[in-house]
Length: 210
Length: 338
Image (cartoon, rainbow over all chains, first blue to last red; front, top):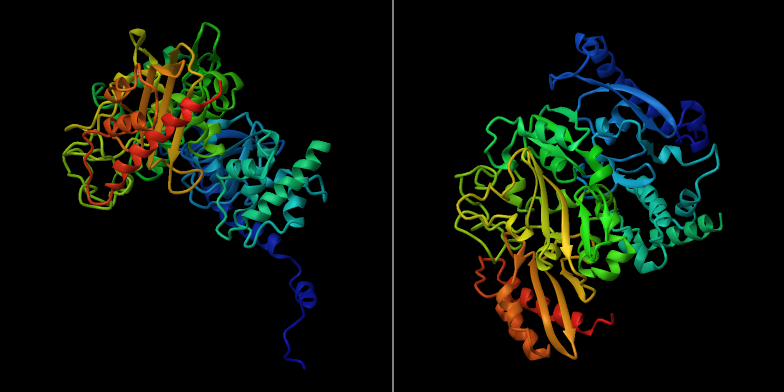
């Protein structure tokens, strides 16, 4: 049957790259335009950006690496990560601090990156979902979300995981009730909540054991 | 969001100078073209919505070194204005000696927002009125003075029933402010002329004919600290909302009692979710003094706390709910083991 659809295996072989690599490449291509356009302008050479329309040179420390960028002063950490640094793991849900999908750690504390200005957190340690694993070894919280099937569509998951890591570290994961209260800043439209509680519990016991 | 410039203030003097440089220095603080940036959880949100349109932000976070203390040493509680909500909510001694303070902070917003938001910014947070937050509504006296109020005859289920005016019925959204006003807190303000203190109860202004003026603060003035005298171990914050967590109050009560041998020596009641400003119910408090706090007294007090309330089409339920919240909070406080 020559017209049967190709198997998954064949399809993967033909395309030569997976969805994640494709998405990352596409994101890189789109950000290249504003970056070069801005860098080439006269604006980039001016010392202090007193004119609000000019980009500002700044340095963010993300997942242990210094990342220079030249962006508008209005740029949030979330937009800096996603649009300029190619780190699209942190998700934009509401963009108003209401859903938690953009949660990252700054100096180890969980914050919503959509309401945090990039320019204001220079020099501070930003940790995103991309900074959790050690090589192929997932962070215990990432593994727990897989083990406990703690998501459906997955859009809120990076924010849930970052928030859950902080929740354990804050010692707010001592009971189901506690976990529900201290994870309430992360909304899951698929309502995977019972499994998220189970995942936080699983990882909490592993993290505490060291 | 409109373009803006960003400055970092490295000390209080620089912050005050930068903020006072706004044109029209006597304008309402909320309308100033230069805004202080602390946690940013209200300001950045409202800038994205185009409700607030500052041309310059002055980042005051470098002042946190001296403005974020949590000090219980002198028989009172002194809280720096740049202390983060989460740090105060989690402080064991604040939880033990001022439960109403810790609970009002813990029951507000989300863990992420509490890690960001400061105490000073929290008391200045702006209303959640839909017609204020959505600029596609032409009428909002708070956002656009003189334009009318779309909430009066709109969907006003979340709106205030106390302290309202013909110009505005937007409810004050915060929780911590109720604890402060109940405990007779003092607010410390740093400005060009130096540092001065005043009762926290005088900070917020009811809407009247000028709902765009929300506090007595002027451009160039910053809240630097809050002070609560005495200890209030028999106190709590009860918050009723549409969902169990991470939601604004439909009605809430901050209560504090001093009870000896079953007799109320001192009583404090403040209400949230139902009023246009942090709301102290002094007449209601007076009814408890020298009394036993039985069901009848609690009911009597609750009625007095909501006296003068007036509802619009969708928020009449808040009058009953407010009474129940007050009565229940007082009864729970009376039973606390301390």
